[in-house]
Length: 460
Image (tube, rainbow, N blue to C red):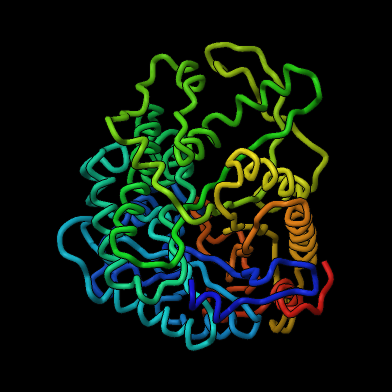
């Protein structure tokens, strides 16, 4: 944290807390490429991407924007925008190709080079230990539904702390465990592509257990940089003020929100959700698990993109929880997500109240996908919709700060266009345009807007 305080802290012209942290974010499989370089093992996303029909157009992360080789250029882009911190993720198979056993020194060397480059340019390093690229060897042994994977994650995390702990400024254990468990093991649209509710519940529990075990391992090192977790919670708003819609919205938050945040607070899983699916097997909680999951953290990261609207629906075999998402008037992004800036304000206020203000908050992802195109001469990319999106969401976040929420920083998703999971390269989130043919980077108008906000020269 000391390096983070000394480097990369910026203020805007708004009345932000002293030391407010501005950052951008990306993830290893989405930007690194070089999937067979320097001893990296195979991840579940390598396997899933090569599965026919799993990813649009058969796209993979094999090359992406090649940040593995081009990171100095990307770091310079961050420097020139006044970015205070880069949130990147460490690729587990690059560090430990089989998910257990020997560690790969060349993998550690890459992240040391990246962090050294960031620090040379006055940018902090915020490292996420797991952003979905589980070593395929561990999936072959049962993946996250297998309790042993939590133990393997602890060992991997401990190795990262040992090799990188003196240079990382901020640690995040997991990114969006809801996606890893529900989208990966229940819905099947993310790696590994399974469709088993019981497996998803087990995976969610073991992800949280791995988080707790990794946090315990970190505390044992005596390192002092802050450590936390990033969640993509959803608190849907009820379609009307009718009691049945309010109750439906509350139920809709059980799996997407309470399952993941309540155990961090020492509270149980939402039994009401499990009761709705009597044929599924509840999470395999063992003695001491919940206490480990609730290991103290230094902050909570929140990823926010939209706020859904929920109404009551008849309870039946196909809808045992009795709710449905309904349309709203809001403009939608290229991901077909509604743009609800005020939802971010409500989200921050709800989390702050639900956690009793126990730990400071960071927005660790926020941004939007737009159908970006370069100008005819290829030198600029005008993205006014993204500029407007960011402006409105910044304002909502700052309103929450003014109303008492301890929000310490804001990471825009994403630094650069990249592999957008099952959508491949068909969705662009970056404030920097990526030309996937020749790897050219072109800053978009939103990049310059972000620069002006950070420097205090642009009002929100």
